[in-house]
Length: 438
Image 1 (cartoon, one colour):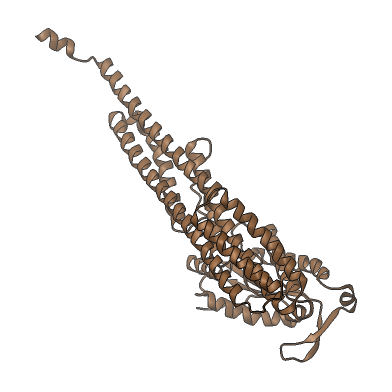
Image 2: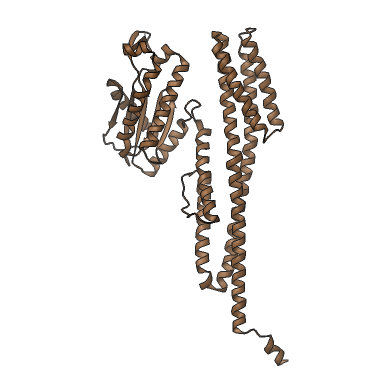
């Protein structure tokens, strides 16, 4: 009996072997579980990037295209100009093309509702184009139905996207919990062997967790600071890519201008409030086109829209080339734009905007008007005046910590400065360097 007890005892080497075997088991189990969890998350992220985000973009295009068609039909009913019929047909082809693309991945009843309502919309538009009626009320009613159908399809896809994000969060939580559990068990068996493993994996998981929470809270610029080279690095890279795309999607879904595609007032106020709360030092540049109304009255709404689009592109490119990645460009509305840049970048950005705008503006005037150097037309009071070739004025508000506590006060100061800038001839920018106390 004693012999059996003796032989049943494990030697030190066997205990070490079993201990290291247990360490290897838990280490392997933790690694495998972590890798498969991360790969699953990676697949969800890629699926969102490749399918759901493009789908949302297509629904935005449908809204824009339908609005353009409705405007073209309404203008035709008043002006009877064939160019509006041509514009309508172009956007109609665009709408049908996007519907066809959506149908490749989603052909359910919601899409059928869009097709049915859009067919009714087309018939109402055809009545206007055939001069059978000038009443645009039926057209507007059917357009509202089409928009409602598109919105229903978009919301349905948003539900699917939310489910994917929730599923990704659940997988992440499960991966974190089980990886930490298995790693801790290995750590108890051999602290020295498992120390490096726990520090490396735990650190990466915590960074991913912070990144996920940060993105969920709307901080799309958060960098998990995980080096590439493994699955965790790949996941971190995919998180960063997803955050950038979600940031773009958020800006579009807020109140982006359908003409310039630049963020609107809601996004502008949000950025200003965030910077003020963080106590950052920055510059707010308000750009305004001089004598735009006179130009639009003379050349028409379409050319005026083209000019505003050009101004938006010029301003965006100037900021991209002369400011850092944290700079922001927004479209307040009409011919008013905003740039939020570092205070050290103001001169370079403003001068780049002025130079580019000056180079582009001649193509928007006829040779005769360019030769004269001005156009004639009524001002806002109905008095006939001479208006010079259009220029751009930029009012710059330098925002230092403690000087402003709201976006409204910044806007009020900018309005005052803009009067100085617009009072000078030609394109120019004026920087307010006055100190203010809160």
